[in-house]
Amino acid sequence: MPGNQFNGFTDYGIGIGLRVPHYRHILAEKPVVDWFEIISENFMVDGGRPLEVLDQILEQYRVVQHGVATYFGSADDLDKTHLRKLKRLVRRTNTPWLSDHLCWGSVDGRYTHDLLPMPYTFAVAKHTAEKIKAARDVLEIPICVENVSSYAEYHASEMTEWEFLSEVVELADCGILLDVNNIYVSSKNHSFNPYDYLDNIPHHRVGQIHIAGHSKFEKYILDTHDHPVLDPVWKLYAHAIKLVGNTATLLEWDDRIPTFDEVHREALKANKFRESVVAAS
Amino acid sequence: MAKALFRPLTPRWGMQKSWTDGRPTRQVAAEFIKPNDRLSSFERLEIYNRQYWFRLLDCLHDDYPGVRAVLGTKKFTRMATAYLTKYQSNSYTLRDLGDRLEHFIQEEPAWTTPHEILAADMAKFEWAQTVAFDGPSKRPISADDILGISADKLTLCLQPYLSLLLSSYAVDDLLIAVKKNEEDALRGEASNAIHSAPRGSRRRKPVRLPKKQRVFLAVHRYGNQVYSKRLEAEEYQILTAIGRGETVAAACEGAITQSTKTDLNWTDTVKSWFDIWTALGWFSLPR
Figure 1 (cartoon, helix red, strand yellow):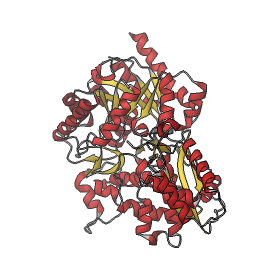
Figure 2: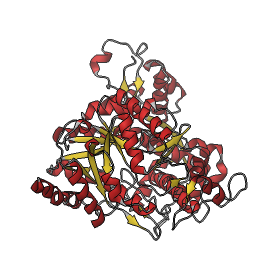
Figure 3: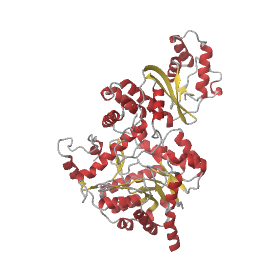
Figure 4: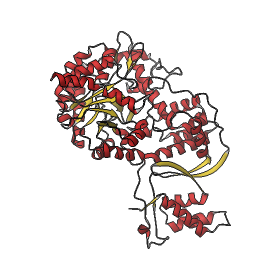
């Protein structure tokens, strides 16, 4: 299960996000990192320093692309310019799979630059799956869709979020990027049992896992990616990998970014849980 | 929901209480957002409304420190809010968020008065830096490419990442002073303060705004670093004429004829300019 058709049958271990504050350290010190995740849109440019850095990273490291603006869930058609630039980048990085979010974020050509939850209906699932399939036909690599964290629910929803995710990925025949921090955040905001979520998705479709930190406010939790991973999220992660195996795992840390070593150390804590899966088997 | 997100926040960074048709926003929100045991429909929608504005305002705050210094943070935030209300993002990347900022400042000078010309020039200059940072490039010409082509037949293209600017103020000097004055990272740092209002200015000595001074600038990149270079008026004229498709000879003749400088050896001067521009990789061949 860890290496499957949705992650190109790879056996990637623990990775971290490639972030600007760490460029100098990575290029000078060449630390041992199993893989880096890049935000596709940051490198869908036409020239200059971003691509120079990317090419240097690609010489030494494995890279997987993660997008934030394909918006499979938007009513708009897929943006052809975005797709063309994304494919160009896919060829450059040779990413074994590509991920983006199960969300909407644009309407009539206007972009919110956010990852907005969708109403969980069969019609929306069908529409979203069609867009995923269309994108995959263009990109010609496996796609994993990530569950987002959310702070609102819709009256129109006909099912739970995990039922919706399952419906979309089955219709699209695509993979899941399982974000356990997002499950935790959403479970607190919407009062559901996060283990119900984990137990009731198609585990064989999980191609990658995300872990991250979040911020607690008085009445809700925000997915801020600016803290270490909290214990309840580690517990969810431990449960997840028992279900899906030692799947490629990525720590997201996107704000108040500490040193490279601190981020990498945090990511490698996942090994403690992964080793227990190996021991149990 | 998108309509709710795009509506500007109140002065206290909350979602507007009245909808566009006069109904209470809480009534509109309740039509499609479920409340929970802690937050009303209004409050849940407000989280997204605030996130949208905080994210985009923070982006402009980071990418336009020069315009921010010209206006001051509060006035910049008001101007940026008006800009984003009129020109919502039409690109998948936040990089393009300010591509119409100069145009907006010229269109609606009330938001930047009495510094509207300086603000527009600075917006133009800072957008040019974005273009130079990651804009496309073509193969620069080599000596072999133009061997045997006389200047009255030679046409060249300017690199797409190169911007030529005529400014009424020394915006290059001002931006250097602003950047020296600021502790925050101005470019390339993740800035995701989506759960808090845009940063107010820290206590720092305000930068003195320049007096009017016409300057000609080239904003470009070399070795993947962004630079701005002051140009003589004649350099600017030659380069813009070449960019319009004029032959090298016609471009040079036009600039020299209009020049008021009388004590220059134009042959040597123009040759040295072309040597520098070629070494910087500014020219490519037309297809």
